[in-house]
Image 1 (cartoon, rainbow, N blue to C red):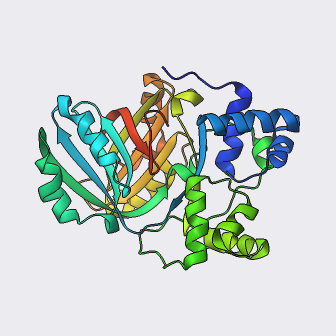
Image 2 (image 1 turned 135 degrees about the horizontal axis):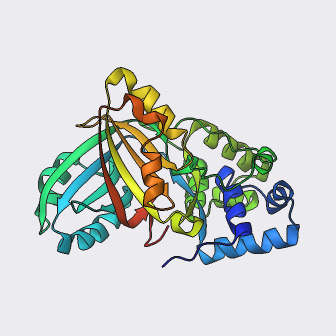
Length: 316
């Protein structure tokens, strides 16, 4: 069972969720805590893997694939698919037992995957794929209310464009080297980025800012929701009319507990992932104002995460 982080550690995580590359001095000032304490606790969180700051590159169009599988086979299938670098997340759902994966389409031939590869696994009964049309929220935007308004106000959230589902712009060698370094460690210092790219530090700093502004990658702070006190995760498929999709998506994305909200081309207009403290909290989330223009809702608990934001894990 995952241990809940201390109050200070949760606040440090909250600061990193606003800007994963913020210097410890900036975080300490925002939290009004001693720099030495914040730097030590922050490094411990990152070094232990309790919190991971990483970059997820924009690899273009994505698709959410839902797989119905025999319970005895679902974990082995999840592990197999999670190993593929084109898989963004792999979540095991309950009631009925299903596996949910998001994939970068350029890494897969979807027809082959959905008609041949996945159905070829023992125990697979059904496969459906829904291309993502728009993101309202991803894990890069998750702000579960760990900071007070004053603390958040003293931090400048890293600006970034809306995550795109269009084909990304090609990167040259230096830009690719910078993004690759950030994929390994989102807090890599500018001097190290410059060395990796073979450019000067001012050039690396300029390229880094340009890459972020263009949406070539998104910095994400990955943490097990249970470590923040959110022991329950739910996956929602939402039916609403097309003219209401924007309003429902925006309203749901505004909820602090929502981690992922997207419009998809499929049986349901929207899909979303929520984190909650417990089942009564889930019930409360499902009765908020965003539900008014929803025609139908299908929900499942997330029982296990094999991958989040492109990283293999049993926890985060």
